[in-house]
Figure 1 (cartoon, rainbow, N blue to C red):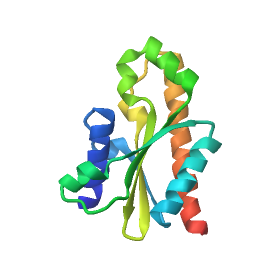
Figure 2: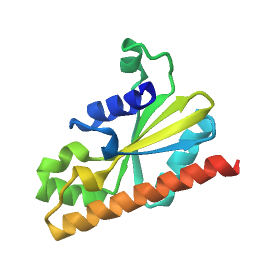
Figure 3: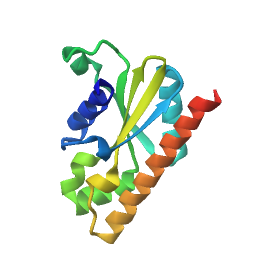
Figure 4: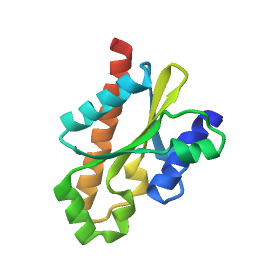
Length: 152
């Protein structure tokens, strides 16, 4: 249970909305944290997204008893889509930019992302298409990262 606690906490802080395990997509990468972090950024760019920033969250987690410096949240997005959403659907600003949490777990690295199809119930057809596209892209990224861990 403690293994799920960290990613759930990360996303409760990161997206300002309640999160449960079924609202998360997770994958284990059988690689070290530094290698996985570099590959994740490469994969995000390869899928046509711009990296926004990488935020350390280990300081807050250390205050809760976690003893690692290997917790980050990688923020990314597509500028034109984000601008359109901010203009037409400002209620969704809390979900922007997209994010994937990455943290070390023994010799492996875990990647966690919110399930956008569950969190954003889109009625606007254009918004629905964008969110569904994001969801598919993140799923592909996570699968690619999992294969990276198996091939190395």
